[in-house]
View 1 (cartoon, rainbow, N blue to C red):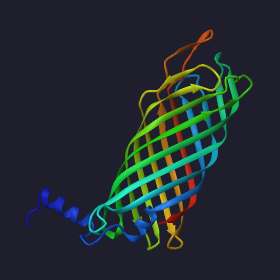
View 2: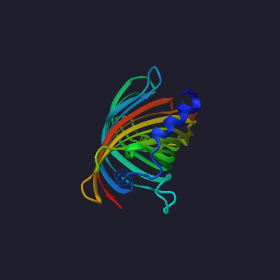
View 3: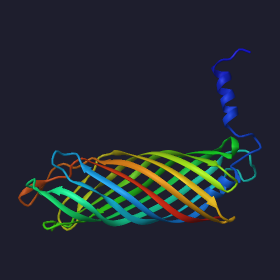
View 4: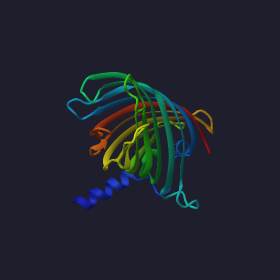
Length: 274
């Protein structure tokens, strides 16, 4: 038989896509239709891209809450695409190590009594695959903030508040390992836009430009009972803040330099599948 690109594409589609009689597997649908609560730990590494810049690193504890839904687009059929929606809120707080410099360039060591918050909303379409797997491309939007409170001898200004909106897209890939255990992998490329920095306790505020954020996540969900699940997630993310132009303050100019932040963490929690 003669093969060409059209034959090969048709064959691959037939191998990957589920048969017309199938839809999201019960295990995947149960894992993706939940209300969740988790405890979390996260490590942060922050670096200002200057020859003499500030660095921060350390662990923070926190929690997360979320909800997700995976249901057939047409409830009367079980042979088509699925509707996917999800929301997640994460909170972390604690002391991380600040290794920075004063305006004179003299090194300054202190603690950052830091607070991180992040909320993300997703909407997408689930595509059932062979062996009960599910491929879910989605659009995403949200908001993240960092309340940076450096506690040092001369930190009278009280630190800074960073914030930014999120927008972009990603995909999630779910694979049922057993009738109750589902593993997942998620990748996202987001943009940070509409954000900026504000001084806590002093008159400084400027907007940021648009910069990227990359995020990868691996997860496991186990249905202990029909409705009670336990799960864990591990993630890595990287993003930049564009920095600001110099702003005159009292007797000198101040500005926020371009910076890079990398965070990775683990969430462990329980879920109610409905």
